[in-house]
Image (cartoon, rainbow, N blue to C red; front, side, top):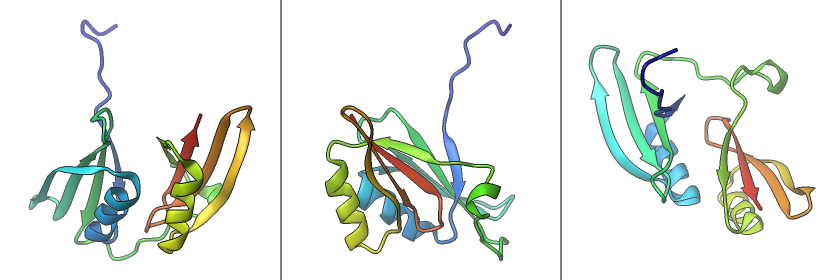
Length: 132
């Protein structure tokens, strides 16, 4: 066993257009840019965003040399989804829909008082929205 506890730091997902992805996560989910920079060693631009409470970090990564950006079919994906707790699930889903965001699963009640919906970010990453 390690002598000190491990700390989870962040999740990184790839973005085909980093500005579009930053706008999506900021405008729809309220995430704020913390740091953005270019890394010349691997020709990548990264952007860290934090949730409004500052408890979770999401890294968006764009590689200049990545020419193809295609999500695998649903049952062939290795990364499943990101999840966000929201106060008003139906309002977020309607805001997403009116902005042209793909809603893959309409709001449904998983158990009494526990509602879920799924949308996709601009690159097809699944996002679970949770209200309980």
